[in-house]
Image 1 (cartoon, rainbow, N blue to C red):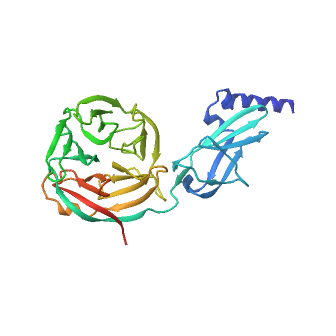
Image 2 (cartoon, rainbow, N blue to C red):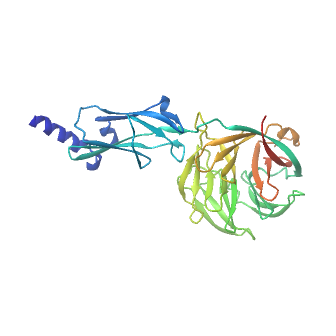
Image 3 (tube, helix red, strand yellow):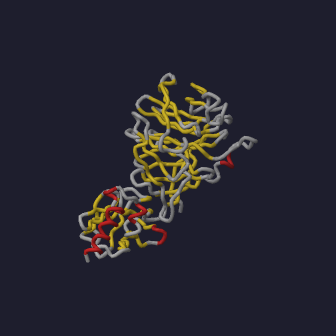
Length: 348
């Protein structure tokens, strides 16, 4: 018995995280499982959990945590209802013989139901610069702002809605590929694609005020804001939440449906707790819950591209902006000659 205890304490001193052990070493002693296919669970479902003691170590107690909040499984089963969807951190803290160990697993919590399908009704059409490779589109104080892309053609501009004429413009250096924009605190924030940084301009003069680096995000795609924080897409399955004072990524949402994680959010627009996002390379947009990351709706924009002038540079749907006074959306595409004002309606 004495020899056995010595061996156990040696193992614990080697494998305990509190003593500097590694996660893979703890996994030699214990296995933590969420018993669901591919570790995917729909929000609100109950799921079986299992903590396997591989070496028959004496365990005094176990505390369980979901994203650092303690949870209390009953009969080895727990309710999966985190505030934010996507990948979670489920952790077991194991107390044994005066030592503490931790082991984690990463289940994915998906939306509880499938997205609602929407279509559109065209309210008005307006001229749009056919040379504009549209990357960002936003209304502010009844004025339309646009960001365009492609190296050598990228710009920030203010546009006359009725005529499509450019009222104000600042071109980007030809080294940069312009991407999404958003307006907040009398500043215009503009992303670039792969340069790893964005720019800040004075709203009135378009004077360059500074630049900011990307840190956690991979690339610059779309931007929007809710008046308090800025949301950024980067071509992954994440929408990053940025501090507008520092432009650092302080949190993120993971975009999910009821069946999978999704990674094609492009240009963004925030409206009443929802993020409307163009789907990259598709004639559609998704409606994302800005609190959870769930895709609650999909808007089918097929047919719009058929109504614009055909030419060699014609490209995909991109650009979505909400007009708060008119309570309608405006959508266009890269090198489209038309800006469409539309009403979003549920598909029958």
